[in-house]
Length: 82
Length: 137
Image (cartoon, rainbow over all chains, first blue to last red; front, side):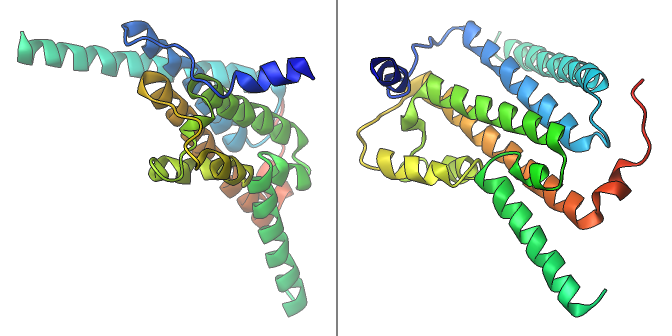
């Protein structure tokens, strides 16, 4: 009962996340969720091995595109302000 | 298709949609897409719980952040019960954790909306027509 209370209590106060660049890493678990759900709804038949392979490919593609967009935005801001 | 059968099929689609909303993955489960259902349930539940863990239940705010709340409500009607608890303002969340928590919980809801549509479409089209004869390669 005490353990359950402790578990519930972790959901009543926010985690301590700073304003540094490291908090951008939180995007990757979300990209993984998007990749898994997209493939789970799109694949005609779920064969686990092929499913995992396609999820990894989509996750890497999404991550690469997000990093590319971030880099382009960074360069754009640097050119405008620097 | 006879009239009675059309009504039954329409009712079945509604049941699939409501189940898919009530419990993520349940819509696929009733149309016997068990693996898909398990994957959807685990992924959406984990995404939503991660959002709650990061930003606390305070990220579910039907008063101050109602546009996010609409997205969050797509996860399950149970979110509405959480919304009733947090409406009192007892649990506050702000700053970066609130942002990340809101994004996670709302994206979980939007992904579940995609799954609801997918389940209803599969039920409408007939599972066999969609599946075909693929092989694991």
